[in-house]
Image (tube, rainbow, N blue to C red; front, side):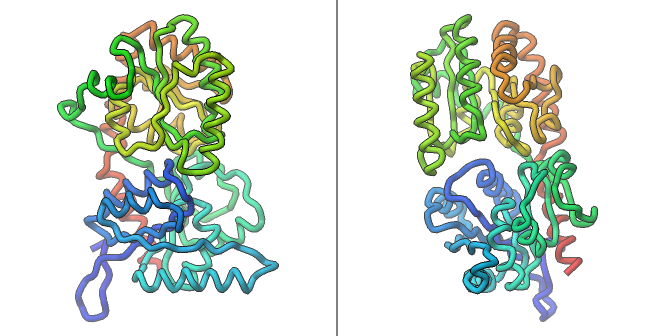
Length: 387
């Protein structure tokens, strides 16, 4: 069995995978890990290592019945090497107590802080890189040296990675989403009433935490142009704007900008939600105006729900969205291009429906949970085989 190991007495035991979560809030990295755990729980015993203040994340794992361990992230330092070593030993002790066979770093930051701990615990480990890293500091490179294998979320992330690695240590694994049965989608009218959205207006949605990386200022500028022609349009933002200090502070900046532009009443911010699919289902158009991205789950989910998508041509997004075929692409910080694409969908509903249907079919064929689960299982099997 790929998901098991011999316990030394001839019987098989499931491998234990410790997922190191380095952030306090819930964003794409956390949601992707939650979905990975859900997809692989039949094959592996998963344990989530969460920071002390990651309350919502720990609650999410608890709700799934996944064991969690609270840990303190070691702080890499050459000057204070003995302190770093001591902190790493403490995390290594927790990994051994959890029975970890494999440590799965949720992103580069997780490996940066805890790769020494995984080494000291004598586990095999893999680092999941969900965005591009064309540049890495010397300290980052040193902290990534103990990593046995890297999983890249897109071909672009692998191609541009700053470290020169042998092919055997690199693997591209696309994320996956469930394609819902149309009969399970809740009534749009009911959800719109809950959100206070008029039934007749067009709803443009963006699923992303409110952080500088997601470039809500470009969305705001594009919204001005859209509203000039279609004033009944509303914009729905689904993503954390209060759980993490960075997001909370940036939300205040975005809100101030919307007030300055005179369009604050056209925007609805839901904050972090666990029912993202039902909110996407009521959107007419989905956008993602981001500076930097790996392989956004939100885009996959919007396409799976047969929504026309407009996204920035960065990172792995062009590997999902083929311009004019399965969605529209625009350049970073190009509010004019974003507005033009939204208006095109608003004013040509047949074209929007054609693209949404093509996108849905692409997701159904290429981004299934079964394919994703098999790729993760192969990654772990290769790690153990090379131990």
